[in-house]
Length: 398
Ligand SMILES: Cc1ncc(COP(=O)(O)O)c(C=O)c1O
Image (cartoon, rainbow, N blue to C red; front, side, top):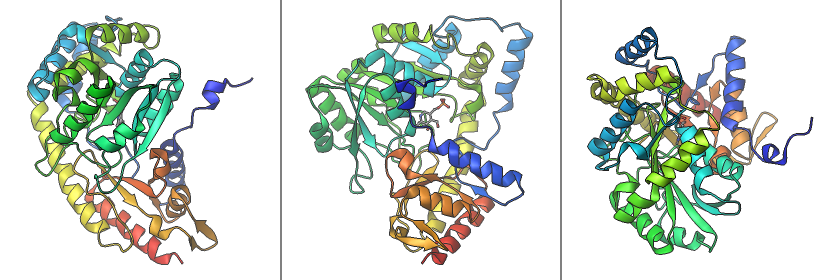
């Protein structure tokens, strides 16, 4: 059977490939420390599990409105007001099968064939593929160490052409852990307003921000942005609910309606039981405490991994202040060899490192081939052992 040109143009996720290899090695009894997971290693809090069980017992197992149950949309409206200082109404909220799904429906709803979307690199691997799938053209902007790998005004303006429609901002950022300040977001907002652009703001890691930084929503920095931003969020990372598949977005009413229309032909409503679980997550009493505890634990591990990695000569990385990743420049080792294996890009580095019992995601998946991404959602002991193996590995290279 012939694959469509559209499907053939999609690059399969490098994250999945390395993760699968690491899993296969583990199955064979090989010791592998996996820094690859994009999810918290915490269990979903019990009060959320209980709400899902109750939903089943009450028979809440049928279709719901495409954009989600009213109570959950209300809870999301309240979250935006409480947490982000943003006032929406329920018609502006669309609940989906995960933030990834929200993103795709958003892109599909606003991008026409040939429209350009500015994507600051390094970027989360899915943005570029979804833009291509929706017929858009990615305008990749390589951010720099100087700006902390954040998009700055000058670079943004340079990337704009008459075809530019949209920019994607991800703060806190996967993979760098960068968090945009209000001032930096205002700069982005000014450029959007000057050129009449819209924004998609992926804020899925909003609850994981460290060192006294605060998360600011792009939609909250000006009236123009409120009217021209689609904010993406979800419960996956904040409440350790990755498998429940609940994301959401907030958008101007007409856009939310269009997105809901698109979603009505893809997934329909998100899983009904999961919607009740997400409702409990956002409104239950234990929520804030759970987030605080998880965030404190990640903060400790972040400081620990940063300390350990900084003891290895040749590694450089932007100091992460959000999400749960460290994005490490390993290009100092390109041109070296492990036995007869040459290392000259992030994939060969990651593959060679895997043979030494450490799984990481090659930076090429994020558009930055000089880097690897390490997720610190594993125990401190595992972090310690994994970084020790990385140190031994780079010292072996010649
Ligand atoms: C930046 C970013 N956005 C969105 C998502 C998707 O979240 P969800 O699991 O809710 O689809 C992820 C998951 O890894 C992510 O890292």
